[in-house]
Figure: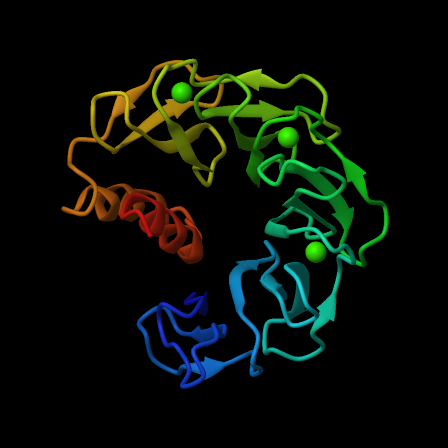
Length: 250
Ligand SMILES: [Ca+2]
Ligand SMILES: [Ca+2]
Ligand SMILES: [Ca+2]
């Protein structure tokens, strides 16, 4: 089955210069524009059941999280806060969203991870550290949430339970680690790290053990090879796009 792909403005900026979200088939055909306004609409994330797309927009004056049907209809705002709300990611049952926000903090870089129901209710803060916590990614089995944090002086990949308990450092490396994502079976985590002096892709087991470097440099086919293997078992297309952005420093 071919799944459509949502992308932000890098794919097709509008004449006004604001980002819009588009939908296309996996082969690039059948392009359809889903948002249409003067604000920036970006960071599209499919729900795991394929029925909804969460995204980030500043159409109401600041960065908020929205969701829409996969055809662009019924666009609804989910967060209402003057702070920056971004990085939405769905629970496997498509009933909840994790996201990052710096709400309530005077230090702009102090983002925390929050969770809410898909109608915006049930808001709960999962991290409380005064440093940066962002990029949440819910595991395919629903039991864990990955995130990136600056609490240990350099960026590390942590994992926690969906209620915020048992926060654990998986990378424990003095260089920057980030861009974490789950393999479709949830047994492995891909991430990038500068631990060898430049940015490279690594894979580790879900407990942080057995770290291995991918065998090629990012941007020279390494990402495609990794994604090619995972896509055979259902690797989400839009995550490839996002990791590709991170690896290329965009
Ligand atoms: Ca906001
Ligand atoms: Ca924080
Ligand atoms: Ca690190």
